[in-house]
Length: 308
Image 1 (spheres, rainbow, N blue to C red):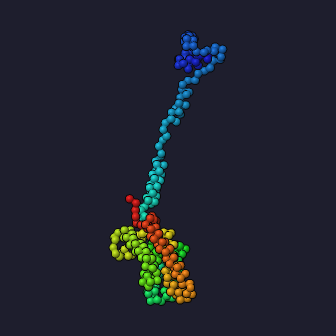
Image 2 (cartoon, helix red, strand yellow):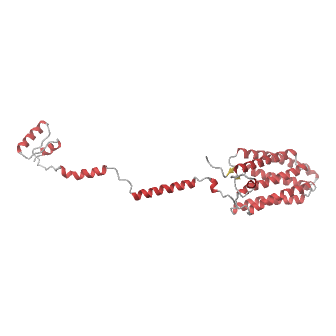
Image 3 (cartoon, rainbow, N blue to C red):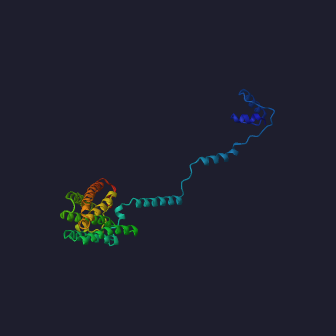
């Protein structure tokens, strides 16, 4: 069979084996102007049935992939459920993660309580002009203020009640000493008003935040039960420095009567000028530290607040 048979097959013509039919096919090809090479050897044309397996394989490849098996689908559902559980744990309200009660009987808290107790004793000694004893107890309060913080950080004894009573003890000491020294005319009245006014405003705000953050039921017993954490107080940086400056100033005011009896009369004026200048400086830092609590977003952290 000639090459013409292949060309006829491409044109969709039906092949026959009779010579008469081949002649008619040849005339048709000539009319359609198909190129014919009569000198080439004949080739055979494969039947359509031989290409059928290839077509079936192509159809199978074009078909959509089968769905996950039942076992694989079950594992997928289990993974989805686990991811939901993890998400619920991560988004769990913080009030469920905070213990209802905490241990308040730690060494830092005990040292802080001793400072609270020593504050009125120091004030009474100042009024009675027992300067040496007052200065010694005041030094004890300053040293324990540093030690309790060091122990809490070193041995991880942080507590919510400690974050509240530690600055409270400092302010309690400052208030009592400031009032007693102002009554004895050892510090100027304006500075006493600034220190006491700032501490009074901070105390009122502390009582307010304690009330709004206390979990229900809000009772008087639960309000003063400091083992129930409700809010944390984080002193600002300038407030920490201001506390140190106030302690130095109060300590200098306590020891000043003793120094006036020891130093030479020519140095008294210089001592008074230095003491007055330091008082102006403490007044400025006290005002700035009070404003820092107003404009700081991290000074007070309500523990039981949930996102709506």
